[in-house]
View 1 (tube, rainbow, N blue to C red):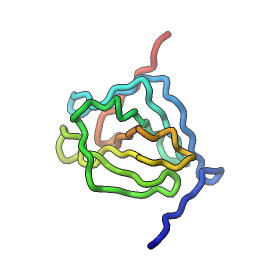
View 2 (spheres, one colour):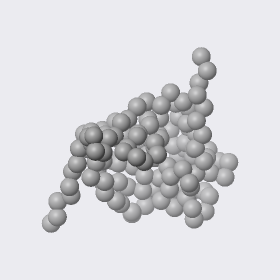
View 3 (cartoon, rainbow, N blue to C red):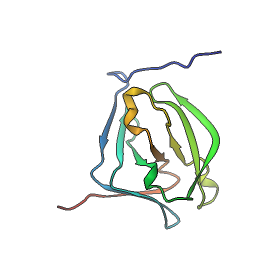
View 4 (cartoon, one colour):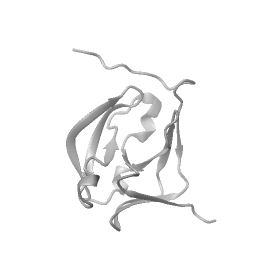
Length: 127
């Protein structure tokens, strides 16, 4: 059995997670898939920021688990979901870390969407 490497974020591969003050809405073909005011934004190394949305804010019945899994040495095992509207481009368009490593524990219970497969909008609240 091969052990999976576990790496810690650091200067060579920084990861930062912050609460996103904006309302984040995810749609496909005009249908709302998720809508939240409790998103987290994760910045990792040189990658674009990723919005993690509480699974409880995903519309019931709009995503379905797949049998596809990947591994990230900084975050852990990753599972994928398919959005049930939108056609082939929404297959495995959603991912989650069910048991993320301690350094990114805040994303537990959240899902993220590939921005090239869904429409993600941020609306900053006015006060």
